[in-house]
Length: 562
Image (tube, rainbow, N blue to C red; front, side, top):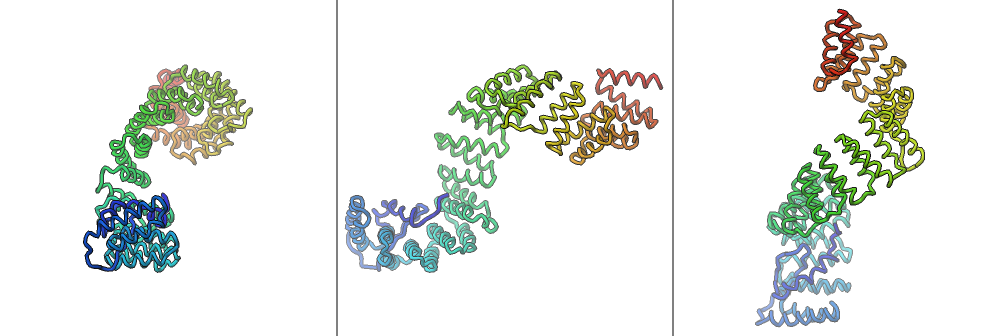
């Protein structure tokens, strides 16, 4: 947002009023947000054919201005003004030139004649305010701008000027009521509402603390009013869209961007904004369509492929996600983060060979990045190839030690430790889980895993109990953690405490029952002499895992021993 300046934008805009000057309009209707002023002379008897003679002098002034500059044109402009004193725009043009030359008195004299000729015109008062402000007479400048608004309450140039003076005088609290009064106008001029929306944005950017007194929705509201009066204006639609984005009204923003693209399909950058608006509005399918529309015009935008792939992942469409991640890498293979994302997608799809091949190719480009060996370990672990997983993790750890670009993480040591535990390397697994916890003391997965390892081995039970209490302090209703705690109590011989935790665990996982929990509950009930209920829970465990030979043999033994 550019700073509003009547010495800059508004003053220079006088040249844009040539059309009005040519017809000698006495009191022009505001067409742009930076309209100039219109002075006039004391009333005089009608002069026959005055407009044609005034036009002659005006044309001569324009010619002189083009050849010799604004000062040379003033005499001819003044002659035109004397013949046509109701030409307020011309009076403002003359006053502007005098002000630029620091001849304030001459400017004020012209403006006084304009007021006498047309007392209801707001423009001369605007320029008087500009003259007073240029002399640092801010109180008189404020009075002049207010006089302009008495004559035309929706005269936006005067409102802008007042806002600037209030900022200059640090009369900040005078700004909200001025804007509110302006906002309540009933103008049907789209340019007025667009300008007021810009002014709101300028004020809120300059003084964010005014959000306590000014609604943050007002800029968007102003642009919507502009749109209601000119629904197909591209500039208005763009402002509507941008302001709705700023106000977090993403659906409304997307609607405006979409309409704008129908009018101006050549504005390709708007497709990005439309896609982002749909994204923010959580309209994923529409965002994908918008992103694909960008690719039709810019097929080498690998970042757009990545955005589409991310959305497909959120929609659980891994096949489509893999396609777009691969397209992104085909365009720009130097994206290790995309390699990681694609490998994980292939892992979820159980396309293990594709994932390993992807990683092997990436290793040639990124030979020292530990993430690639880490990924190989994850995939081998999912394949239950634990020795391969351990080897990959070991390599990843060495790569971490050899470079300073990457740092070890708690999840890495957790997965490494889990692979070692499943591969039968208990002591190494425990050491790695401790590293994971040291890097992230609130890694509840590692706390639970190590605690359960100890319980399962029936060792370090006091330490195991402490680990599980820490995990449950973070996730008190995690049924797996409650099962681990119950099993620790079982190992400690605290069967009633174990029963309490295991029953709660069963209650919390009714949607996804777990055979291990039923097995632990059965063991605990048996220790407490509740054999029938123990058998019932053991049968539930066997039903959930009918191929589990250990559970089947235990059930046979308990049943035969009854």
